[in-house]
Length: 419
Image 1 (tube, one colour):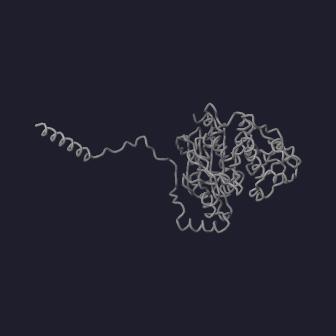
Image 2 (cartoon, rainbow, N blue to C red):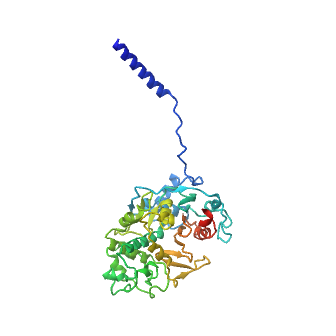
Image 3 (tube, helix red, strand yellow):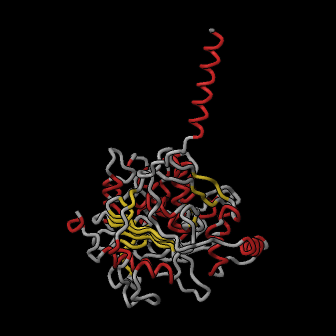
């Protein structure tokens, strides 16, 4: 009798198990699972044939600075082509809420542009040489599109990386480890007696060192770059004239390493990249001597992570108790040397400060790079605009640096009207 009960119980369990397995599954509740709201415009990437041909061209010594798709392939495949180190992402990526706005998507670009004038912003990024564009207002993504890259692609930033260098200097300033009013030879004895002697670190940050622009090949192979930099010659007093110089960014990178005791890559990872809530690891080019190419090819990152860095300069990104961008750093960027002016076809006076190429009278600042890359920050409007691009074979680049400024002044991002 007991055996019969056990058999019956076992049969019931089997039937119950079969019933559960056979029962139609309920549809998964996806009400809280939202698809990304960005546009990819049906971008499909490079074909296998294109990738093979472009990689073969570059690996065999072919010139990648030919613009067009060959150059875009280089921008998006740096890790396959150049020596690099990896900068690890944050353990806690910063979540960016997506609230796309039609008024920004439909914003009409200026008719004065060399190409694409009068188009909506959405049409402009598709028809002009834009790889990706993201706009963040009050900490939320209000426009994002990827017409010629994937959202997860690591794209070369080139000299935008120089503002990561200046931010590193500012972090060391905040710790009381660097005084930018000191001359650079205060920190490097090997520069005493050279033309660098007496040049304040602040003038180097403003790219007004007065040191002649020199080829970088020597420093890239040198195992004593400071000794080689000491041979560079001055062409004018420092602090008198802006002159773009990769050499200024190089010597600042070496200063970060000297004072922190860390490789620049490690300092970047520890003090900036992981703290901004980066979602992806980044790449940083390195020379044959192991030094960081922070002044030229620079970093490769996703567009969102570049925007996260820009966000660190805005009220939305500085809400934490210990923001990486201090009040003092923000003030020093905006407190410019007004003798270092240049119009750069923006129809208003701009200045250079802390490696930011353009600092405007209203406190906005911008850094651009080869081929159409850019990062625009407006602390007053809590606004970040980041973009990537590649010039075409007719040497035409996007003009998103001009559009960014026009967008910032358009009224679309005035805090009072967007509460």
